[in-house]
Image (cartoon, rainbow, N blue to C red; front, top):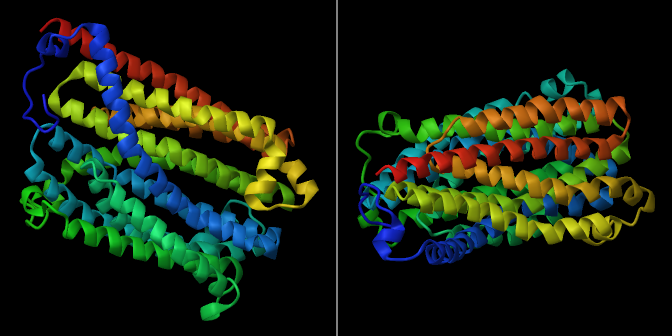
Length: 474
């Protein structure tokens, strides 16, 4: 059965192809692995490119001292919370497009993109407005008034980039769901090359800004260029007539986008729960000494870079699960999810081993840190980053697999329990009350990720087993 064929009532793939169970398993596992890496590779590189913008900013701010690095990290953390929530709210673009693709209704996929654009604009505008209250927010959560003021200016500048980023995500999600992730990857890394000279100019006083504010402005300009490049590519995409890209959607984006938005309404809070928990931990770090805040910030950059691998695998897994779901091929759908989980663990294991045994050497090499005292403070947290990301990536992959089946709300509830209900209070107790500093915050991350991963494994197993029982009766 081709992946773009019309859906039909379920029939056993083993019976249809004449394959035995074992030969079917290895055939489909190899197929899923090939497609997973074909999709996930560019997605990983693309998402890493988005994060590298902030990583480059952090590295280039390093010579200016811990305060500039710390305020850039704290100011950006508030922006990231809104960004991740917006990305989750846009996730329905992937789900609906992959379902239509799997069902062979590719002519309707362009309408999904057309409806996603105005939705992204609305989300971007709301986000820009919310970032203007950053200083008030930082003061309410107990930050030092001076730190709150200088960090809020970073949030204001970063916030301007929310509008182009939401439009970019609408277009890039569509391309990824259609199996075309490479253009977005190329464009993102193209703007990374632009970011370096922009930083050199703006960090040192260009356009009347400097330091962390200049780095934030450089990144905002680059995000605008990303939006222009990817959206323009979709508009001129080969096959645009076949996909209905230039056809006005009927019904319009409000009435016609209900299914897409429902998926986003569930994914948005889930993404926000995890990102919000990390942001609260950043607030806790802001209450600590400057070295502890710098340790948490730099390790969070490392954590985020590693997580890009899982993010790419998770997005590709959602597409593979969604296509199988559109075909009503339940065994293949189950295998698609487990394949994504398997490769997440395999790829992150070597990273976890390196960080566990060589924490100081890794941080000194990656961030060019020469302060031995700071490296010593960072090392215990760095050791935990790789292990935590294996589990966090695993839970994120299975959550996206569940969303690919149309199971919208269970991943959201599990994320709320794992990250809001467990990680935040644990971080306060371990990091603040027990005075374990940044290391304690990362111990709490490990705890929350472990809990969420275990519950999502159980949930995915139950969903797969339920469909298997139904298939056996057909």
